[in-house]
Image (cartoon, rainbow, N blue to C red; front, side, top):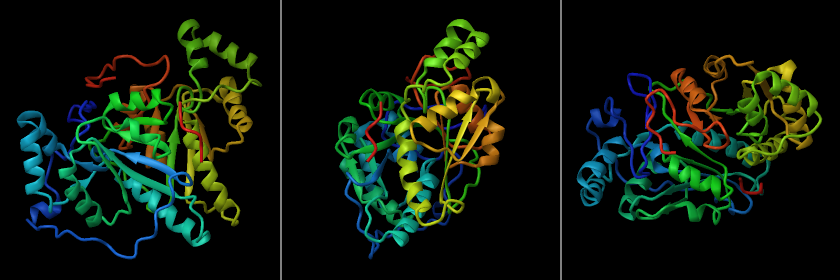
Amino acid sequence: MSLNNGQSLTASGQDLTRNSSSGRAPWEDARTVLKPSTPTRKPKPPKPENAVTIAVSARVLFTMEKEQQIYEQQGMEEYIKYQVEHETEPFSPGPAFSFVKALEAVNAQLRELYPESEELFDVVLMTNNHAYVGLRLINTINHHQLFIERFCMTGGNSPIGYLKAYHTNLYLSADPVKVREALEEGIAAATMFTPDKMTEVSETQLRVAFDGDAVLFSDESERIYKAHGLDKFFEHEKAHENKPLDHGPLKCFLEALGKLQKKFYGKGQRMDCPIRTYLVTARSAASSGTRALKTLRSWGLEIDEALFLAGAPKGPMLEKIRPHIFFDDQMFHVEGAAEMGTVACHVPYGIAQRVPKKGISNKETCSAPK
């Protein structure tokens, strides 16, 4: 799953493996071998019912394209054999890697402020990989010094059934089919895509950007626009500006982020909070922005920055924000973001879902906050 040279996105339906197709990792060029290690003195992971749980697939956390090709072209047995033979060689970082590192940076600050609290981010590696691949994944996690203690390797079966057991607040995968399954189970989920060249992001502040309609909010207003046009949409929003929109599939994730933000606010760190959220919407501020902001207020949720673009491209604004992750329900905006270097995620929800146009191969509501 990547942006190819033609600047189109591709996604594979099999959530097994992924590796970079261009260039070898530095440790491969040096022909060094990773020695398996088990870091010591790690903090104790929080109980799932207390944490904000982020489930990530192996193919978005690491790049495993070469292994995926072996699986698709030579079959499962050769794939497992290759993984075992190379289990001391680490995978290189994938599109979710910087996001996970930012989660860990937030956790470090939360532990300093609240040493006994379990209200932390908890990352779960959720993959349908065979357990034989587990050693290579563990060695890679230790190599990159990631704090991921919870794994779910299902040996080819879908991991969706385990997401609720882990109290998952967000599921990120390379497989749009599994993402749809998760959304149908009421779990916030998105398909993650990889730009050819990822923009450098902050190592100390987690930045998360959301679209509004059909992501944070329901697709009610978008249905009006699709059916009756822009003028009727503006009329509808003006007439209903005091009526909150229903929640969308990622409202619960924003709520979970807000809960952790308030822990920093409680220590006088509002202006230095290591979590920052953004609303990046095609809505116009004067014509339809009021309802969006009033909806967030009615939910008791804050957004740090709101950008009403009135239909302008989102990519250039996201390039300035430099979020670790951006969620949108329309592939047009996902593509535009990825072309500017942003790690973008597609939320396959609402009336806007259709077959993408720009050469995209893609197969095409949230757990209660804790």
